[in-house]
Image (tube, rainbow over all chains, first blue to last red):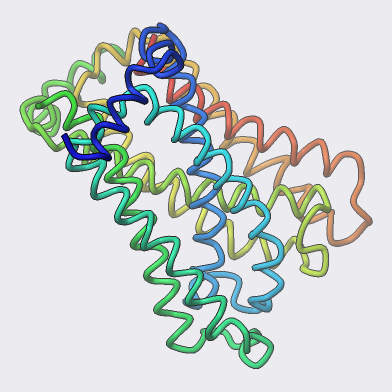
Length: 167
Length: 156
């Protein structure tokens, strides 16, 4: 058995993993919190992305929107990450072989790399373009990547349960 | 009302949704994406009304732009919502969670177009009042309630 699969099996069989799985209400409650966290994360980062694409709030400087939404985005991320890990804990052995889960993890890594490139790249010179109605192409690509990746993460996340049911 | 739900369940859309394996999953994913956009716009408008973020921007300009996103995503939500209801129309009709959701949705939309709108207009003319803050909190609670009730449809 590969190392990662053994790790998943250990988590799955651990006391906490089993307790979440066997409780009547724990999973749906954590899942609802997970959905709320995702809404907070994606809803707020989407506003920054849509601003850079020139879809909304064109007259507000980009850095001002970033300062307003990023603390909310990070709060959403923390909620999503903790609740997501608890969900994974309770069904790790099943998730390991679930194709939707694997796709979701890859998309999450890409969604993490994207802002690293953005913040160390074109955003460092944001003072030069923050007033423009439409951001420069490097920023627009980051925005499109962010919207696409997070949409994919939501779709893949929703699909995890469907693969569980149909396999 | 019962007749409408029964008709929706027996429509071509309903029959397609009942037999398709991935139909519901796809429509639900779009519904979730639209929830994120609606949630984001509500949150930013109401946090501005609370005076927490973007204080330098006028509420009028913010709500004009974000209001379009809000109503656009609401349209997507209603269309995908009707599609999902068609899969199990009568079950929704009798579900208390679904009825709560529709009542809260009606209240949210009504509130948005009336008292909330008035607060947004007044917020630019006067300093933020206790009323504008209460409006923002009611608005966020109502929309959150719609989401929570929606989540409960699958459980109750």
